[in-house]
Image (cartoon, rainbow, N blue to C red; front, side, top):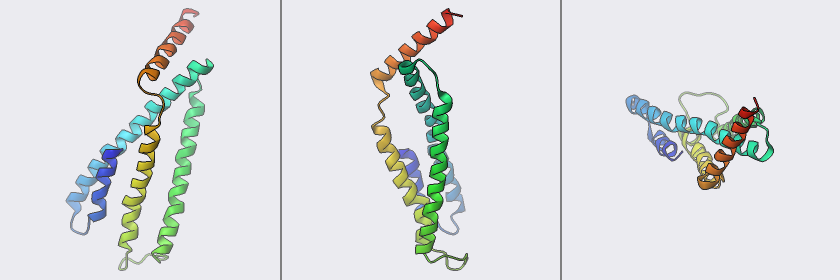
Length: 151
């Protein structure tokens, strides 16, 4: 996520005639975005494993459902942010001559950076790592071996 934050910053300074640089920046942003999209499934899998160890039941569907709920909530939140920013910019009607640069740049950089910093703080407090995660995976493997032996 830190890479994603770093690659978002150049968007604030891009302007007309910088298309090649913009393509390079978007490519680099894709690396950070891909990392976050990749890691969420790993995190959910770890949570499902811990839940299975604690309850004896795998409930992936519920966890992925909650994940999708928060993704939809985030989408709604984005639209709730865009409206007031355009109102503050007094950009009620599209006018290609008078584009509110600062407001549009803030939507592309400042707000995503704030969200990513919040995500980094949340990941910092994520409890499933190190020895505890290894212990959970060992217990999960034992449960799966026990279930296989009954078949």
